[in-house]
Length: 158
Image (cartoon, rainbow, N blue to C red):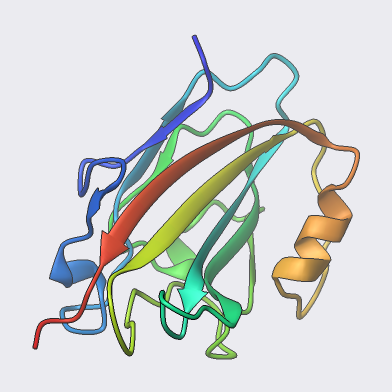
């Protein structure tokens, strides 16, 4: 079975419901995964938007969520999960709002794509302290066994 990341909240390439955005409750969607390769010791999750600020002229990738050291035996994350509800070994990095935790879609213009990328790792990463996406990606180098991706889209209502 291939390594897969899914959500009961939205379909791959489908629209993300407003509940999970700045126009709603801004809570994280439920995520489920399966088919992790043999030897998976932990997972890392990075959610970002490559279309910021305008999909017609993107200038940067906006980071919405960074988690690492999710247990290798885990198979998902509950909807609206709080940092203190994650398994104790799970660590969080800063998003581009300079805060820890999930920050939902809030595009200033147009329909943006949101990439939920889950990495199966052959190791637990060291505690990176006050970290961000780039430092987590650097720490993962040489440890990625597989990657799964779920893409959702969102455009603010007028």
